[in-house]
Amino acid sequence: MGKSQVCSTEDAVHALLDYLVEPLLPPAESTKQRTPSESRQLSVAKQWQTISLGWSECWAEVLPLANLGKE
Image (tube, rainbow, N blue to C red; front, top):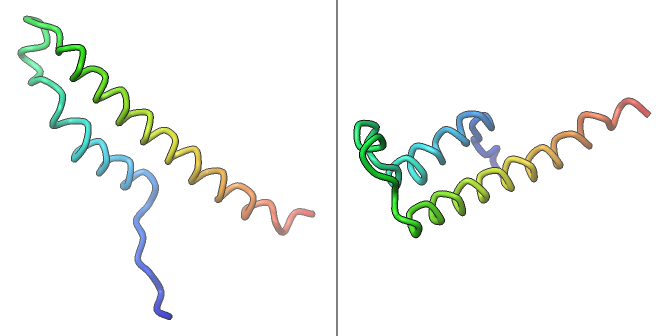
């Protein structure tokens, strides 16, 4: 089995934000004029929740591995 290529967690989070969250946000100049619809706000909130859960799950896997040699 070959070694898989992975990116840093920070790069992964930035990619998720760039491709999932940012397209749903209104342009910066329009935020002063109107608030996004409730459905758009919910969609962005769900994506943020998914990203934060993924982030937490990643750290839950990394931290136990970092503590293996300390016992």
